Image (cartoon, rainbow, N blue to C red; front, side, top):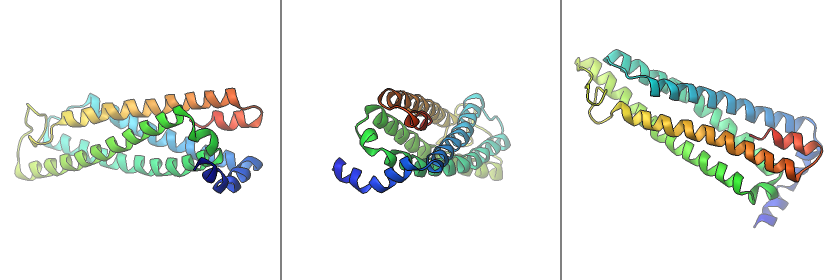
Length: 196
């Protein structure tokens, strides 16, 4: 199967290897999406971990901020997926057998699953905060939430998983680049080094 995939991707691999601007463009797009999406997500996770909204209005503002932030992060992740597939397809034979590559993909999967859970939770929090504001309900001091069904601690746990996942992706990407440096020489070293 790997041979078939390698053969199917050979035109892209050759185009990628023979071009001066395609690798630069794909890598730049991938890295910028990682920096933008990961940076914004890490900042949002930090805000969640450090905050405990104490009023309905603060709770609603925090939930709306998360919703806005996640829209940007999701766009960045979509760009990372497209550019990442392009990078992997450029040398599928190497990446397909790399344990570090698959560990990075597993970590990315955890990030995506956690992000979906976090997005659903923030929607529930926003709905609860909006309903609480409309009804004049106070924040429950036990759950730090306008709804006993959606405590703020749930978001804090997701923020922790998100932080660990983003850092894990960068760490594994760096390790993947280090493995490639050992195996490759010349121009490819520079190309793969940037695949974080």
